[in-house]
Every structure is written in C-alpha cells, then in structure tokens.
Image (cartoon, rainbow, N blue to C red; front, side):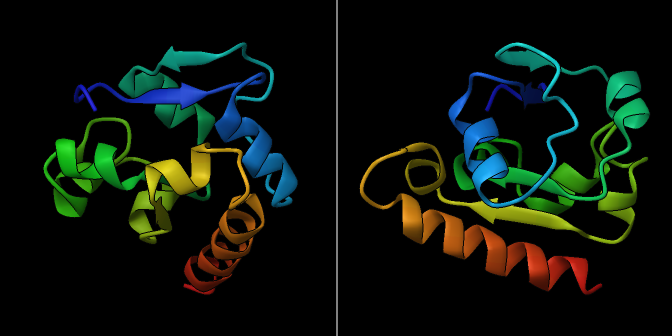
Length: 114
C-alpha cells in the first residue's frame, strides 16, 4: 500500500492461504513480509501474482501496477496473470476461509488459462 512492493514469506496469512489453495509461494523460504526490489521481483520470476484490492488501489490501479519496476518484467505481468483479492477475505483466516480458498482457486484457474 506504500507503493513499494512487499512479498509474503512463511509464517504469514498470505503464505498459508496460498499453500492451502495449492499454490507454490516463490517466497516461502523467507520469513514474514519483506520489501522487494525491482531486481528481486525479476529474479523471482513469478508466473502469477496475488495482490490485495486495497494495495492495488493504493498503487494507482491495475495498469500502474503492471508498469511498476520489477513487476513489469515478469511473465505474470506480460500475461496479465494477476489475481486481485479482497484484503479481509484472503488474509482474515476466519470463518470465510473456505470462501477465500474457493475464490482464489477460481481466479487462479481463470488467469492461468491466458
């Protein structure tokens, strides 16, 4: 939300949700949330990026997100494989977790078909 990308490593709600949804987190070997440089994003080479709606909005929307240094050089950006999820739904880890997982899986299947 600050304009600087951050990634979610192990011991975060985001990592746990990705794991439960059957996704492989490229940052699973890192601890917690970490700022990511443009170089780090490029080196991680994600096929898919999951971002919260509030973070996307704070950064100026989808087109601005896709142009961000580091993001722009990824296959995820080139193929527009960006999944946008409601913050509280995906990170809440509460009674709506099954809904979050279902929605995440559906969105991932949709964008990966591109």
